[in-house]
Image 1 (tube, helix red, strand yellow):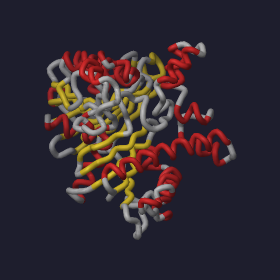
Image 2 (cartoon, one colour; image 1 turned 180 degrees about the horizontal axis):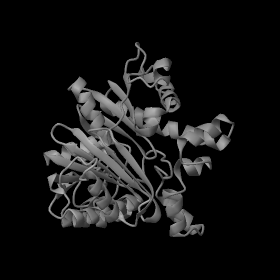
Image 3 (cartoon, one colour; image 1 turned 90 degrees about the vertical axis):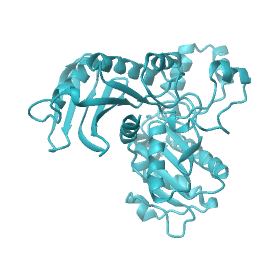
Image 4 (cartoon, helix red, strand yellow; image 1 turned 120 degrees about the vertical axis):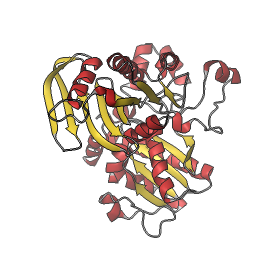
Length: 389
């Protein structure tokens, strides 16, 4: 079976084509700056022969144009890997949130309406997926479309599901803790489960968006995210955890709803705290050069990570694995060191040499917890779920 996996952004669309169940990647590609008439970028890689190409200054006015461009290259005579688009059996999407579905589901009109109903909880992500799914359906009308929702891995969390709000709000409006980054944390769980079927782990997905997940025997039992993406850790541009009453106070002080949303969703997080950037690399550089606010932003970020790890350590009753993944988790030895230095009381010890060299296992031999760096593969999780559905 040929499965195509799509990951949509506000102005981008990435593709990866798998042969399943072998999990062999046939081709991959992507479009950047969707909506541009003369400045879009298109990339394509034939994974069977290694040929790659890149087109700049392209005209890609919408998602449909980007999809058609990729499919044309996918079936082209020179470096295509399929004889026809009819070979594509399913398209899998790393969808975010829907009121109608928390798991893996065919993207029916009911499920899509659920995404529209909860649009306000993830506006940037939901808009990109709704538009790209509509475009894909028009280009491949006979192909089954599957959504692997970010909430799927956390769907069975019970103890942490409810907030202290009137229970009727949960029943009527669906107010609950949902969790995201499910494909990434799910991939970490799958990797660990191949080593040891019974274990206690904490997965740290640290990137532009970050979250901590407690995993018991391959299943999520806790997440730092709440109902929306504006919760949990400090993110690149998003606030993370916040006292809800603060919104009313800011309105009283004269800020408009738009001003508040911009502060929470676009100009908050690492960017808002540091005044430098939402990109951790620039914040670290500024802190190294003596920028006080940049160092403060790093301290707040590290403390938030440690806070959730400590909480989940107690929930799990101990810990076998601590895993770092995603852009920052995989590449920032400084963040990993700063986090683990604070975790000495629970028996975590780093081998500084292994950490600096990005080894797969970075804990010292006498550490009571195995600390690992595992590159995540969300697309593979989506491909597996789409194939099994």
